[in-house]
Structure formats: structure tokens, C-alpha cells
Image (cartoon, rainbow over all chains, first blue to last red; front, top):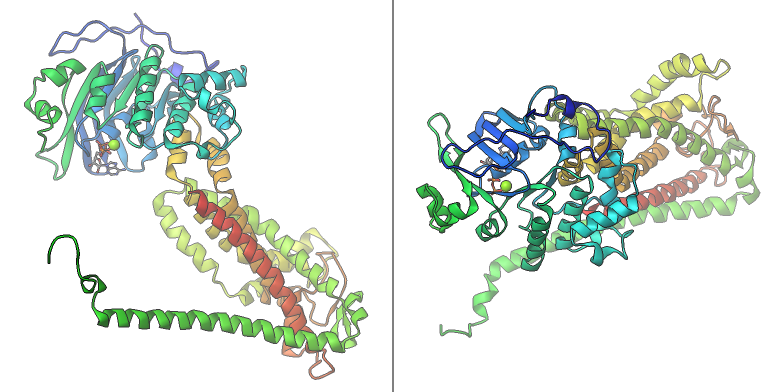
Length: 295
Length: 308
Ligand SMILES: Nc1ncnc2c1ncn2[C@@H]1O[C@H](COP(=O)(O)OP(=O)(O)OP(=O)(O)O)[C@@H](O)[C@H]1O
Ligand SMILES: [Mg+2]
């Protein structure tokens, strides 16, 4: 078995469809035996700093292909910080610094040779608040494919992407209208469609439903189920029912005082099958959190 | 007090405080009314004097081939064109330079650099225009304009225009930078998260999103350039009036410089039947041009605000 070498991420891609096709040795969780699955991300001893402040400390976990992985935990425990490490969005924050490794199909994303732009074309992101561009619905979808040099049928791609995001029927007659004329839930699905349009390998979602009503939330959740056959999804959520409903694996983080820090640092408490986390957690802190007895 | 109904007195608050608040309100209303009154007063005095001028002058002289108040020639086209030439040259400098500086500051500069450069820009915007005027006359004219155009005169509109451009660049940069910075960070993140490079994000997302603010910056710069007096009076060389010209390498007269010449009396027209009043007529014209531009830019700025 061979891992992807850093060159794949530094050289220009031939086309959008050049998805990494790699087999990777399956890493076993040390504590509990997990069924063999392909690993997308192998996070190794990851710590993140904002200036002198250590926001997340020594996290190690494997994220699996074609599954939904949920990151849960109390506010400020570093979920956003973690998920932004997975496609190098933290590069945008002036004083953020990352220690440790994020192996993506075996390649360390923080290798000096890796171009963050290439990383983000493979690993898309949906943000907490819908952030469509102030352009038409159509142009929102085509932005990503265009900059990635997509040469195929754009109309078809737009339709496909909107179909996948369960938005097509609602907007097919108003593709030229401003994306900002859509409702919040529609905007968020548009952001998902926009992300899907570049045909990434992984979709990262940071609290994608926090600005949505229950109906829109349900639609986005259905959507995630549809998408996971083609994509691997990592989702941050505050909503524990949501984590329980949609994800296969759940990681519980919390913030704790460390000896060498005066502010609370995020740590990974437990990572396991979602069912285990919610019904039979092995750590007391997890149990307190999922049963609502936190803090 | 029983549940439900309460006495209105309980919700009225202290009568003393209410009286104080209405007093403060009245003071502010007075201040606002005063500034409106002063503006209206200015317009009316301009209007009055302009009417005196128009009723005393041979109206055909407004279309004379030059601006020579001493000879009674008031070719409005001459000074309006002069203003346009100087403004155009100025904006050719200030628009790209100001925008580039704004893009650098807002998108590329490290916060520390921005924190030091932005105040410097604002100081530059406050340089007395006399200084720039002399700089235009003694350096830009011989070292730049006459070097490229051998037969350019020492006093020329191009040098004045470049000087005006230098003068308004910081203003354009500052306003455009505000417009770029008001583009929500979420849009940049969305773009970068799609795998866009910095350049692509700036050109295709940030600039289009800020376009109305940038246009407003240009308009504000333009109205400042049109209103600029000192640089033109010193470097453009229209002291004794000017023939109609569109040639930037030659001397010319702008509306503002014409007014200065009239006001300081270098044209020695004081008192002669309404000639002095032409000053007010030009002033009124200038007032309406800048007013229009400012209303336009206000519109654009408001469009930016509504969007986010
Ligand atoms: N740009 C930043 N600069 C400095 N500190 C930051 C920055 N972003 C986050 N932090 C700090 O890092 C810690 C983790 O923040 P993070 O946003 O990752 O938490 P979170 O788990 O996503 O919280 P929430 O559930 O409220 O979104 C917090 O203490 C926060 O104050
Ligand atoms: Mg967060």
C-alpha cells in the first residue's frame, strides 16, 4: 500500500475529477477495536496556539472515509480551532500556530511543500453562518469550479450541485437572482451546493445548522446522509441530538486548566462510535456532558 | 400594588430628568438648525450676488472664447474645462494609486503595518495645499512635465493636476480602504475555503463587493480635486485670465483659481459694474457641481451600508 506523496498536493491538478485514489493502511484505535475502514485524516499529537495561548492540546484521532464524524463539546473547547486545522483555514489567522501532524491520506498537510490552496480544493468547508457571495445563485456555484479550471458543462454542474443540496426545485427558476435574496436555510444549502460543486474529497461543517430552523436543519441533515456515500464529512455541532442522529463517530472535547497555562486548554476526552459515546461512554466527563449534567 | 394593573406614575420616571432631557434635546435641535441656516445663508448670498452679476453683464460674454474678467469676457466654458482637465489629470493619478494603496492596506498589510500607515495617510491628507502647490511648480513642472513635453510652459495644468492628484490620493486611499474593510471577513473565508488564491479572492470577491464604496471614494476624491484652489492658483498659471484650452501642458484657469484671482484683486476688478460679482456666480456653479457629486457619493456609500 502506498501513501499519497506531498507532490500530489503541490503540483497543479489535471482536472476537477482527479480525486485522490489511494489506499491507506488502516490504523487501529488503541483503546477499543474498531472495524477496518479507510482513514481520511490521521491527526497526530496536534496542538494549536493563538499567540502564547494554547487553545488545543495533543489531540490524536483518525477520521474515516465516507462517514460522518461529529466533534462535540462545550463552548470554547476548541472545536472550531480543530476543524479549521483540517483544511488549513487557520493560516488566515495572524497569530495561529500549529504543532503536530494532520495526515491527509498519509500526507502531512503542514508539510512545507504543501500548498494550502490545493488542500482547500480537496477539503471544502461550510461555515457556521451562511456566507454566500453577493452574486447570483448561479455564479455562487460556478465560482469554485471556474477557479479550479473546470472545463465541462457548467449548467449541468450547477444543476447537479443544487440537486445534491436539495435546493434545485426551489431555485431552478431564479438562478440569476442574488443569492442574498434566499432565506437563511436556503443560503446554507447553497453554501453546501457551492462546496459540493468543486467535488471535494472531504466536507468540513462548522455548526452548519446553528442559524437554521428545525425544518431547514432536518433538510441539511438528510442531505448529509445523502452526501456521505461520496464524501467524508466532519461536523462540529452543539446539538447533541444532531450528533447522535447523523454521525457514525463522535469526538468529545472539553476545556481544562493545564499546569503551564492560565487559560483553559481544549483536550480530546473520548473518541468512539457515536452510539458508544451516547449510551455507554467510558469517561465520566463525557457522560456528564451528554446527559446534560455539564458544568 | 395588586397584580395586573399598575399606576401610570410608576412608568413615568422622574420629572426632573425628563425636563433635563428635553432641554438637551432642544440644545441639539438649535445647533442643527443653526448649521442648516448658515448653509442656506451662504447659498442665498451667492444667489443674490450671482443675480447682480447676471443682470449687469452682457450675457453673450458668458460664451466668450476666454476668461478675462478685466476685459469683461466671462467664458464659463474656459474655466469649467480648466477644472475638468486638472481634475482628470489628478484622478488619473489618485484613483489607481489610492485604490492600490487601499487594497494593500486592507488585504495584504500586516496589522502592525496597517496600524502605522493608516494614520500617516490621514496626516498626508492634511498637508497644506500651498506646500503641494509650490512642489508642483518648482519640481513636478520642470522635472516631470517639461522633461516629457519639451514645449510645456513653466506654469501648466498638468503639473497642477499631478499636484492635485498627490493631494487627494490619501483621501481616496482612506475612503476606499474603509470600503474594502467593511466587506465581511466571512466572504473572504468562503472564497479561500473554496480553494481561491488571495489574488482571486481580492479581485473576484472583495473588490466587487466593495465596488460602491470604491466609486464613492473616487467621487469624494473628485469633488475634493474640483474644489482644490491653492495648487492650481500657484502652478497652473491662470492669474491674469486664460484663453479656452484643453491642452494640459499649457497654462489654464480653473473655477477655483479664477475665484481666488478675483477675490485677492489681482485682476483689479473690484467695484466695476458687477464684474466682482462674477466670483459669486462661479462659486454658485462650483457649489452645485460639488453638491451633486457629494449626493452621488452619499448614495453609493448608503448602498454599501444597506448591503451588509
Ligand atoms: N483568533 C483567535 N485568537 C485568539 N484566540 C482564539 C481565536 N479563536 C479562538 N480563540 C480561543 O481559542 C479557544 C477555542 O476557540 P474555538 O473557537 O475553537 O472554540 P469552539 O469549541 O469552537 O467554541 P464554540 O462552541 O463557542 O464555537 C477559545 O478559548 C477562544 O477564545
Ligand atoms: Mg466554534
